Image 1 (cartoon, helix red, strand yellow):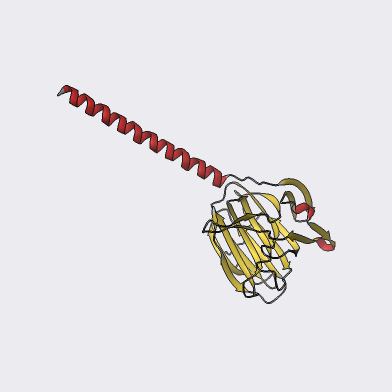
Image 2 (cartoon, rainbow, N blue to C red):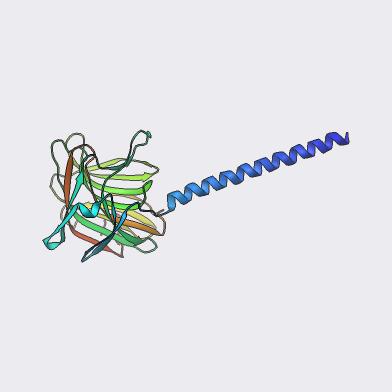
Length: 249
């Protein structure tokens, strides 16, 4: 009888130890995944592109060699063929080849990035877009696009990637240029567009769950065609947020 009880105690002890080890391993895995998601890591090279209202210090996919700055700080930003940033929910497509110019931002403080964006839309330029970014790493970012859709319409589009990407098509814009804005008060992130830089339309709002250090910037994408360019004007990155997150002002 004593032997039975001793064996039972040993079995229960081993079972508890195995359970504890499993929980520890699960916790370690979860921690690693969270660290991977929350780490601001830019797989790019240093650059030094200084405009009056933004300083780009990181170039992704050779972005610093694909821009030309003209009078009044107009930035002509080219992209090569099949360049995009997107991770399809079905797991079949992952593309991180679009060029980006990025500026480091302290996410413990408010911020607003604004730019006038004029993409080059062509008949074969499916998903061509001028883009604003919030970027942490290749599996954690938001892009805000003025993009050509499957029917040839030019739309405001938001894509938020947390391991995989969602895809949200918003309003059709008939004008060739649009003002775009991403703003945060440290707790909330919202994206807006405007035709006149006075009246802003909110298209997306969510909780700011980005880490303390993030990157903000501009990009051009050309997922299908052989190349394109976008023009960025009036680029402005400032340490304040909109006062009304519904109206964007």
